[in-house]
Amino acid sequence: MISKLFNALKRSRAGIAKTLRLIAGKSPSPEDMESLEEDLLQSDMGYDVVQNIIGLLETSSSADLMDAVRDDLVNRLPQDHDPELTDGPCAMLVIGVNGSGKTTSAAKLANLYKQMGLSVTLVAADTYRVAAIDQLKVWSERVGCRLICNEETSEPVSVIFDGLESARAHKSDLVIIDTAGRLHTSKGLMQELDKMYKVIETRFSDFRVCSLITLDATMGQNSLAQAKEFQSDRRIDGAVLTKLDGTAKGGIIFPLYDGLDIPVRFVGVGEKLSDLEVFDREKYIDGLLGLGE
Image (cartoon, rainbow, N blue to C red; front, side, top):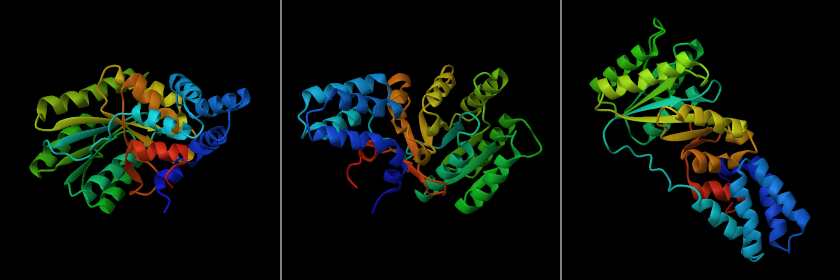
C-alpha cells in the first residue's frame, strides 16, 4: 500500500528520481549532470547539498549511486523526533505567517496527541480572525478535546492565561495554542508573540514551553526566510511542514536544518484531521527518491 507521505512527495520526486535512475545505469554525460543539478535545485535542497550529490557521481559506482545519495541525505538530517511527552505538561505554541496552516495544524496536532492517549486542551489565541475560532470549535468537537476561547477580547495573552489556568485545573498533558498569523515586519504583533512566551514562562513555569512554526512547503525559499525572521529573537523547537502534497519543493527540509538548525517535526500530507505524520527522515528520503514503495 502506497503511504500518504509517498503520495505527498510525488511532485517533489518527479524529476529527481527519474534523472537519478537514468544516470545510475550509465556513465553520466555533462547534459545528465546539468539536468540532475537543475532538478535538485528546483526542489529547494540548497546549493551545498546539491553540489555534494553531484560530487557523489564522481566517487560512487553507477550501481551504488542511489544508495550513496540516500545515505548522504539521511545523514544530513537529525535523529527522528520522539513525539512522546514524558517530562510534565507542555504548552505548545503554533506560530507562523498568515496562510501557512497554523489553525489546521493545531487541530491535527490535537488529534494526533489525543490518539496517543494524552489529555489535550486547545487554546484559540488568534483573536484577530473569527474564522479561526469557529474552525477550532468544530475540530475540537471532532477530536474530543477541550477548547478555551474568548470572543469578547482581542487580547491573545489573556486567552492564553485563561487557557493555561483551565488546563492546569483539569491536569491536561498538552496545551496547543493557535496564534494569529504575523509577519516579521509587524513589530507590534511580534512583540505580542514575545509576551506570550513570557507569560507562560513566568506564570506557568510548571508547563514546558515548546514552539512549532508552520511552514508552507509551496513557498520554498520564502518559508526559509520567514523562519529566519521568527527565529531571530525567540527559540523555535521545530517546524510543521504543511501543504507538502501541493509542491515540488520538498527539499526545503535540508537548508531549514543546515542553515537555521530547525528540524521538521511533523509533516502535513493532506486535508483530513488524520493527515499529519511525525517526521521520519528515512521514510521522507525514500519518498523523495522513489524508493521502498
